[in-house]
Every structure is written in C-alpha cells, then in structure tokens.
Image (cartoon, rainbow, N blue to C red; front, side, top):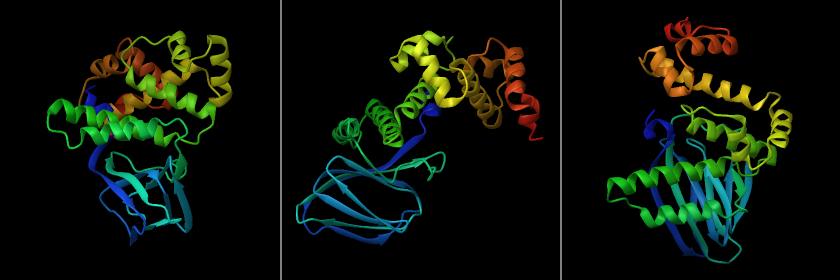
Length: 253
C-alpha cells in the first residue's frame, strides 16, 4: 500500500487572515471542499447549522462541505486566523467531527504553522511533507474533545492502519498507548467491548474489504498488504468477522 493510499486528505488551499478588527464573511458555503479555521488571536463568531459558535485563541472551527455559515470578528480585538481547505475521500461524520473544539495541547497550532512555512510547496519532497502534515493535523482535530478512552482507541487504530503488514503483538499496541499490557487490555476492552487483538483483526478486515472493492489484486497480494499469513487465513478471518467470503464481496453479491 502506497503512502498516497494511506493519506485520506488533499489540500485545496491555505492562507491566513491578518489581524483585522472589522473582518467578516457573509453567509456562504463551499461545495468543493471542507474548511478548517484555527484562531490565533481575537474572537471569531460563526453562525452554522442553527447555532452560534464563538472561537477564541487556540480554538479550531470546521465548516463541512456544502454547509452554510457566516463569520465575523467580535469583541473589539483584532482577529487573526489560519484557514485551510481540503478534500477528503469520505464525507465528514457530523455526529462525531467537532465543529468547534479547543486545541489544549497546542499540537494543531504547531502543525498548521509548520504547514504555513512550507506552503506553497515548490519541491516534490515538500509537497509530500505538506500532505503528511495535513493528514496529521486533521487526525488531531477529528479527535479533539474526545474522552481519554476514545483517544486511546483512535490512536491504536491509526497505529494499526499504518502497520497493517507488520506482525503486530499486544506489547506493540500497549507501548503505543503508553500503558502497561495489563492496564491497556482492561481499558481497551472497557472502551470497545472487544480485546485489542480482536480489534486488530477487525481493522485488517476493513482494509481487506476496501482493497477487494477498489483493486483487482489477488487474495494472496491483499493478505501480504494487510498482515495475514496467507490468503487462506485472510478468507477464514474475513468470513468469521463479516459472514461473507471475500469472493462474494468482490462480486457484489
């Protein structure tokens, strides 16, 4: 699996609102991309989906594709923001993606300033780095405001997705989560209802389904990519988890 297949988002444009006291944008929407705002200073008021959101320094606001919104600076202090637009292979899940969240760790601010220094990319290596930073930033934003348990599960899932072909062990997952093996197993099962290694199998099955529907690769080639020993183990676990054979899924039955 190539890096471009792992990265979910591509950057459309990037910019900065320099400090302005009377800045505003009338009601509008974007049908081609999602937009993300990081408030650097001042206060931003946004009317979106029937609610008024107020973003201050360190806050992040998201405007999903095709959703109407209006923005203005309030409070009398100059407003300064970074903004970026991106396209994603899947729609934003409005039930879980935060329209408004606070970047308490400072990681979003750090990543977006790093992106600002690179944009516009003039070399292929810079363009690749910009794509990686964008996806890392969106991962951070997607999980802002989650509980500690939700963050742990999301972190483990991302780790598994990025190491699908590797022989993952329980110790690897516990180390990624920063917990002892015993404590990790207990916390993970409480959060998900399944064991960590059963979760790994589910993620591998999800990846298998995606490759079955999007490529013409043989089952043996897919097995190598997603971490199964061979096509026979792939077929056995795939059927156990989904109730279907890989062949039926590929044929659309």
